[in-house]
Image 1 (cartoon, rainbow, N blue to C red):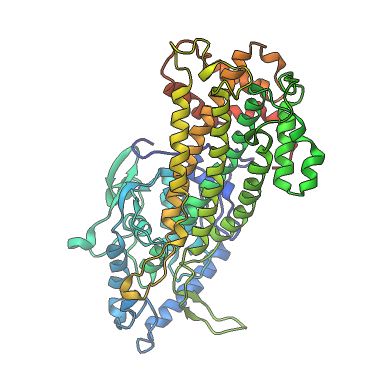
Image 2: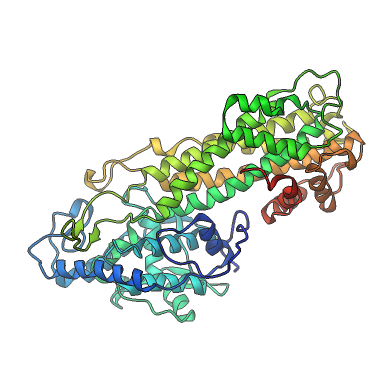
Length: 541
């Protein structure tokens, strides 16, 4: 698709190309396959259909009892919840919440993020706790499978009553209201490489847009969908970047003639930290057989940016593992309000108004992930700096150029990395510590989780480029050692040779932005990590 960008790494290859089923067991791997790999989503099975219909029956029953107020069905929203709404106006109320929340601004979210949102929203509604009709869910599924991508502005969500503005822009395309004045506005969407009005995109895809009925506008706009979708994609990318952080570090170990005792398995076992232990194990595997390591007989120990690599990257691995479980749980949760429960043996059915839409959890998770991943870039840049600085590099020429002075070598590439590292320090300021009251102080504590989602994704983009600069620098350092690639480690040698297939060593000055872009492409496609995979696949992630 043209016009709206994809971003991030390619999806993890899946053994099955079957449709993803809406269930309470949706995984991040499946979400990435749908968001980036265009894997299809299956329809509602009989079990899911039964629970959706049972939940909808509770909404219909509430409409039949107009004297009993039910939030968002026979009342207004937010600070207007004390205003009663006639059942005859319930459909208009439902459409109005979509229209009034469609106030997003800023650059549109990338295609993969929007597709992730469509999937999570469909999965959440299919849990049967939101009171929507099956055709609402089926429409979202049809949009995913046909490739209709709504234009969703990236700014405007407080992450409190869920992601109201982003979800409203999805709902504008997916549903319709009375065909008059502002109520007919359908937003915009990409389809077939063209930017169209929402209604035209859906018509071109052959998808009917249902009119929203009671509760459905609220169900489509309330929820943590933007935050959780962004978190899922960011976790997938963070795991890939951590692997590149280790591979690039291993090449820098060789470029800087590092010492191996810092990777001793007994040393790491003594600290009893699983991520650290696994990281050190992968570095040992990558460097196995290297003639560069331990070749500087005068060196006693290395700087922290080398010998503490497992102690820095390991805890981030642990963090990603923890957050993976939390985000997958959120992908399979019902986060709108009120939730609609049919009668059971344990309790009577009805609408339960609460705060599952509040994004404090995703905001905290995303902030933590952003802080952790900023550290990946921090330590990478310090290794690059050492390779460029002759007082620190163990004999490498200044700025990694064979003719310093006339040529500046990789000097400015490190400037770019340093700028991005500094950018990350601002982006990693936690959004979750902020709040601002809204809706006449009814919504007096908000999560700012949508901001955290955007900032974390930007941090990851910066980390990717910083690591590409380290790949470039480490490969240049190894080239300047003039020992040949045969002396590299079992895992680093194929990575170095892959780099050299695409990028020539730096001699006289040339523009390096294209080289950095090529390396980013090799990272995103999986070619670099695949080159090292034979040495790493047996080591626990």
